[in-house]
Image (cartoon, rainbow over all chains, first blue to last red; front, side):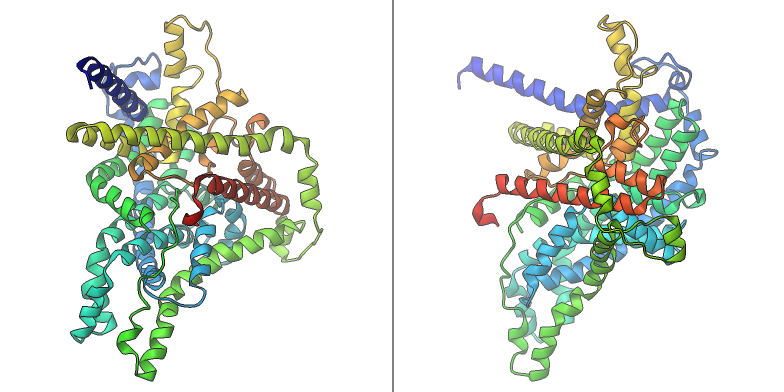
Length: 277
Length: 278
């Protein structure tokens, strides 16, 4: 490569990097800076924040009810993560480690389930949850979220389980270990990265989900999760953009920080689990 | 939810049954073991995903409203809901283009942007790669509901920064409401969807099967059925069911949506996957 072309290509790369950074970060920047700027609520905001304030955050967390919404979402997400991690791991071991009748059928089924739009499931599931008497409660929501995160979780973990060398398992049996002993001391530690990645996915599913939260929780505001909480807050304060952005920031920033911290593990998990099969 | 394509793996082993073979009880236990392991997952998928799919189809053949929900009566009307949906001119002129056209464009754009960013990441040094991929993670972490309100704010007619910048640059005299026009409405949805969706493609260097877009449309101004020109199948089904209590008609629309999405998925997979991957 001659020096001129090298400079050109470096400039091209620089422009591309700048474009990606602006596209990814501008909405985030705008959300946070509007939340911190007094002008966002009163009008006359400009690209750089002018009057710093934390009032929006205080308002959102107290009168806005986001303390409750955050707590509800945390409970829902943690229960979803724990239950679906156990169920997914068991199922993933079954499809990755055993050859049995209908194995391929079950795998195809898991794929097909993944493609079903939530709008098609929301009508029957609403009626099911209603007949169980779980309407207007986060309990009903947890049941649905476990179901929603299963197919993807099984599919992803399957790859991790399959990647553990069978020789390790056989060595454990030769040493006299039971299947359960082998599972605990060989398989479980080795698929842990996959379990972490899967758990992050089900956490995000539960934290972000909207259509079921809106439908199942109805008008039970004390049970609201963050997504439906934000919608209801928007309905009450639709011109107070400063507060709406503060509410958005509060429910987004914890997830963002978490993502950036776990990013290496997460992307390794996704690539290993999902693509290599 | 996103999903990557992956070939079905051949199980690498004839299971651990080899080690317990020879003992009749051990053998049968080993045969039943995968089913024990699968039982909880299959039970949940069957009751909460598959049975509802059957149910939504059964509802679509009934006049199913509040009265039927409360009394448990069944009022079968055959394909009447489908006839009503398919003979509605709105379906062909507005709803299907908004559903199918948008899905096609959104998936293409997401995969294209994601792949380009993946290529870019591969050219960068360690430091810049870490910076850029952290920013990508940040975009990905933005929930659909939050992202939708942020984009709505950015493009808001009176207070949105987009209109302000255009006016300050002298490109526009009066503020314009971008949400009333079908094309500009979906252009904003596209920005939102690509912003949220491309990180997965960029990081895993894979493709997506993601045609799901509800909150991103429903929560935008007029998106909840108020503006008929931006209606899509999912929102239509939802507002007929939960807004009008016409669960049977809503179910028929939901079945149509499912068929449309699975149809697109098959075309999409065929054009993307090589023979040996299936």
